[in-house]
Amino acid sequence: MDAAGRIQAVGPDSIVPRPSDVENLVAPDCVLLPGLVNAHTHLELTGLRGSVADPAFFDWIQQIRRRKAETAPPVFLEAARQGLREAWAAGTTTVADTGDSGAAAEALTDLGGRGVAYQEVFGPHPDQLEEAFAGLVAAVERLCGGAPPAVRIGVSPHAPYTVSGPLFRKVAEWARSEGLPLAVHLAESPEETAFVTRGRGPFAELWSRRGIPLPELAESPVRYLDRLGVLGPQALVIHAVQTGAADRHILRERGCAVALCPRSNRRHGHGSPPIAAYVHDGLPAGLGTDSLASVDSMDLFAEARAAGLESGLDAPVLLELLTLGGARALGMSDEIGSLQPGKWADLCLLRIGAAGASPGAVAAQVLESGPAAVTGTWVAGRRVHRRAGA
Image 1 (tube, one colour):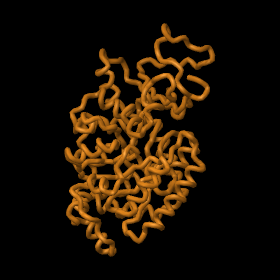
Image 2 (tube, one colour):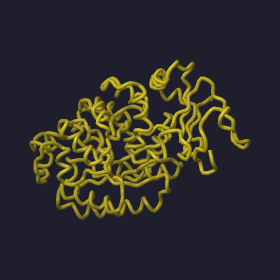
Image 3 (cartoon, one colour):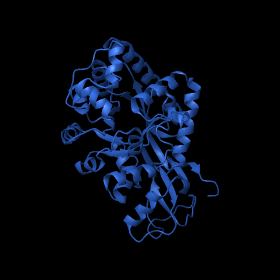
Image 4 (spheres, one colour):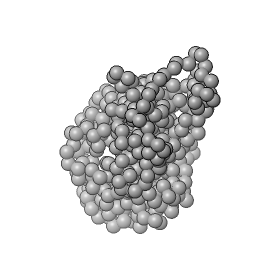
């Protein structure tokens, strides 16, 4: 590793001479992995873990909205710091976070983390367009002014049931013009699909009660956002559960990536995302834990095991989703995701006991592990987590 925190060489001592000024770490029964990439988090909601019991999606969202409205900014910041430390303890070195408080970007900056902080914007009524957009621009400019290179700032028009068509279009156009990454919750739930395709269900009823004009109907949520010009190479599509072959073709043709959260989807009754189809179609794909208001841990190994049960994908493929796959989904595969010279020394040291006889067996052992097996985590060569006694 060089002074900047990038990998200089990888290999056995017999091939790669060890510089005299480099710490010698002996770790028997361990494997060294690229730091894991959590492709979807809500760090500011860490403090809501276990506090919203109702899993029914529409009701759960309303409770989250009320709880957020009652929360002061310092509380969001401390929650984001706690969530980031838990991510490090679980072997994660990069997070792709969405939130509207700015707490994740501040926590990543203060603690020296790596990630993408997507600033959320809401505004279901077309009359809210200018106010919502101006607020988004101001927030992004403020966050960009304080963020180091390791913290990228993006935008997230939240979802089809919280953002008007005109606001979607304007945010997407601005993101493209400014070169900002964009993330959107899309095709997550049957309720969202009913809203977009039939103008029915609890979201449609809520819009009607609030006097908000319903969007023009589309054949699917994916086709709705494609019509608005939201989908493109800069877009990370979060969840993508309710998709068919035609939707997946659109996502692939537009150059989108997907962030898949099977544990959260299961908890809210959304169904299973077509993980194997995304992988086989060659879409850049990563796994995310979603918020700790939905699941109980930042454990990406558990996320991969859930993905394996639902998709039938084997352990090496699942492990790649946690590392290089997630890096590709965030457009960061030149910098992180694998142990290669020139990439950042973002590392996870995992104790697995005696290693299996094949790479597939080792990958299976890794996925059966969990945060308790993570003995150390490094970001750009700086140790950010050390398990007690390790």
